[in-house]
View: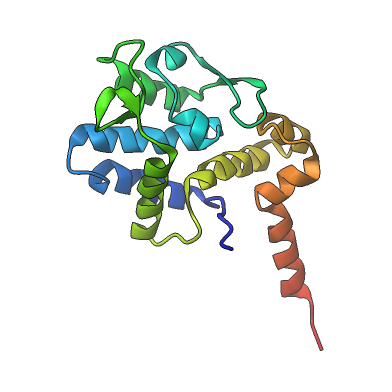
Length: 188
């Protein structure tokens, strides 16, 4: 079983952004959609099933409000300023009821989580990142928020987890600690 990982440094996030912006599709509108899909994942930390269902009306203000698909809990998240500015640009010619991430099969359908998976997986492979998929966006959000705040309880709440230990394992901090310990371990 392959476990997906968070993207662990800003340079790799930037590589993903650049590849999605320039190479992820033939049509400019599809490249913009793919980029905003990724940015939504790493800036909001929602699950992909919730992200693909977002409509323009959900991102008009500073907060995005959803009912978490997995936990059925209402979740409200303020958008970071840089992301909000990019989103404002992205939605400027769209109608409130338009899906943010429309399928090429028509405006009245959103892309499916499997399509999003293929987009993110391909981008990661192209820039040389391993074990990255759509869930990595949410893990990346959690990891960077933790590194910025060091507040495990906040991360647990943001990710709708039931315990702090689950959150630390989820964002890869437990593995990081184990790896550091094993590096120092002298063995026999």
